[in-house]
Length: 268
Ligand code: ADP
Image (cartoon, rainbow, N blue to C red; front, side, top):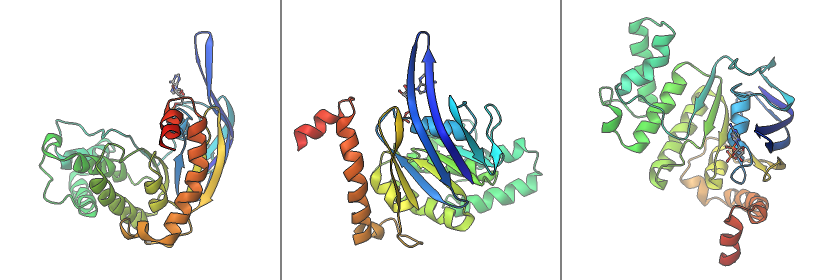
């Protein structure tokens, strides 16, 4: 579904340049859930922006559904969920979720049906007429997820979607996202800082090095689906995957010059 071939991304600013992504090649199958982890600044968000066609690679090619991704042409049926819930404060939950469908000129009755089934999927029934300021952080992020899902994306790009939430809300949302993914089977690429989250949800976890980044580890998480995000954490397999990933990522954190090394060094 997604193929990145020898991708490099260098940002230039005046006379200076910074290569965030050194050389990354990766293929992601239809319906796969892949998480990307790595030190801050290694180009995780850049990678999502490249797949979405928001920016162009400095070298290499990206294909989504066999179509070459060109900057400015967002691949069809692609959804992007940002770290901060991007809901519109002056619209209700129902209006926010149906916004993309209105832009697509879907008839009102159909929008109502579609939004109603989406709200059911994310346990937001009863909150149709609430405005974002009347919702918890978790409910706002759920609303943002439903806005993204409304247009039936086949590829979902998630940029630290749960980063700002408390652990309990986060795990409840993991459960809902996992259920939505099991029902709709989109191809998901999720950037996260949370290794637990990556192992609990994904089919594969990719560990990137510090910049200029390359892939240090591409690990298949062979825990059977459906997974319960609470109980999966108690399994031996979960612990094994977590240790293997941390073994690589922890070393890379220590190597990066952003201050994380000092914290890890003093804890050890
Ligand atoms: P990550 O998501 O892994 O933290 P990013 O993809 O956000 O990393 O950024 C990677 C590097 O590229 C960072 O050093 C960042 O400052 C730089 N960068 C990101 N976007 C731009 C931009 N538009 N212009 C210049 N530099 C950028």
